[in-house]
Length: 150
Image (cartoon, rainbow, N blue to C red; front, side):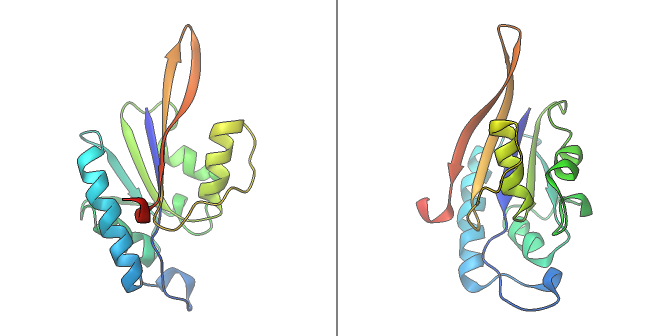
């Protein structure tokens, strides 16, 4: 299974929090990352997106076809996000478009087995794979990239 975490791009300040749109810079970040992902995602990747406007707009740069799920919204936890993705049992790839702090906490958990606060930059992607080697299950960090590096 591949689990790809894509933090929403830069959004405007304001309230309510879930209604904040992307800024011009955020739209550029989302478009740049979407272009990269469209060339590199496995076929039939399941795209799951937070209901927050900034996450929806980020995902729409890649595709208009996605699943909106509150389990990866602004108040999600690493546990609700990992359950929504079906990690590690899902057969295929899942791309989650969501938020801090749960994304950084989930990345830390996947890498260390502990939930810690790790920062994921706006618009960045962290790509994990699960594999079997010599009878052991392993989590592999395949890629970390921010939009300004594309």
